[in-house]
Image (cartoon, one colour):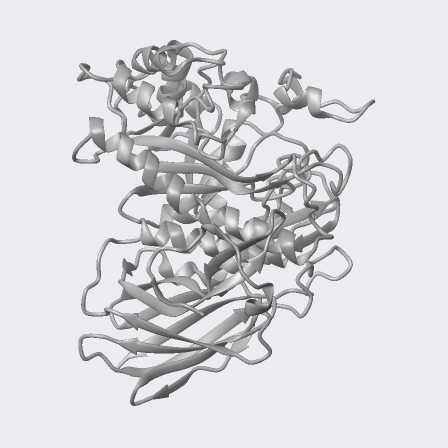
Length: 535
């Protein structure tokens, strides 16, 4: 096999003997980490979340009602709150998604019994006899309470598709104005919260090229200007413009080019963040969520690796108009999206079982995010519970963590640490795909450092062989002690169910330290996290 150095992941298709990856013995990889050259701080918001009024995400996933027998805090599922605190969830994006551009925030205010029932965008996706009518029991105050309970920062998606600039500005004032400055602040106080919510992150619409208004980029740019020019500045805002659908065949490059071209010449319409949606999209593919073959396993992971190319390509276009790159990515929807048919309940549309394969996809994605931390302000998995790439599944009194939950937990040490340059040298794998074969890196990963604690995360995508990895620390650094955890399973289809909630969970990984560095064996089909305390 050819020897190569991998800093970025290899994703190109290729041909070759499939037997090349069918190894019975562990292969070797050399990893070098420049601990003496720490770089960009990895923004904790990269590890963010997204909850939408869709299927069973809000109602049942999070909101069970104040009178529910299910343990709850102010009507919200206590186990969900506890687990989000356990992860140190940095943010929550709400109320959508496509739901956002039909949502009018005032419908969720006041006594619950008097709130209107309203139309939901997701009505047409429901099975026969089921409806997606929005009861508005979970509104602005409930969402803000959830954020306070979990420690997450709110990220609100405003209604551009069917709303007005005034409605948007009123929402900002209601959330952020001090009592006594505006009637809207006094109204908030009358509804039980005197202190401003202090919402910093505001999405100006969602998918404005599609469900958020079916606009062209120049049309949206005009709308964006109207929505943000008179923005109430009670807090220093971070305004997020609708960006492209990066997983489309042409990566939707024309949207990025068209929007930034149309925004030239103005000086009162800041674009702090640019939303990019990238799904590993298998909705029209034969791949199933819970029952799949080796070729399907690798197809999903290879598509996840494409995130890196998509980000860089759009970043280069943005740089033509913003040479200092003042505008950062907000990748506020990402995950694996499979074809329908395996929902946990028919009316919980887009809910998926979620397996070990999705955990490895999560790790590959996070390592890409870490390596491109200079480009990212925020990212939000879609979605946190009862949806596409969820960390939790919940159905009435039944609840389980999915394998991706543990990846979020294993990667928590990266949050707020400094990215550390890492090179991985190892043989390429030749893997089966749905079209034939492809090449991919033996290992992918990232590293970060906080004071003298080094965190290294690695993914071994191989279904056939572990990897013996030797980690060398550059710049004269020495490892004092180390510990590791691995997330894997003998069955690539393994998942956690309501009946068996602990089928897939991390276990201890031996970490050997000697004069030459650190040696670990990364199991096949595994994600590992290693913490090394420097001497």
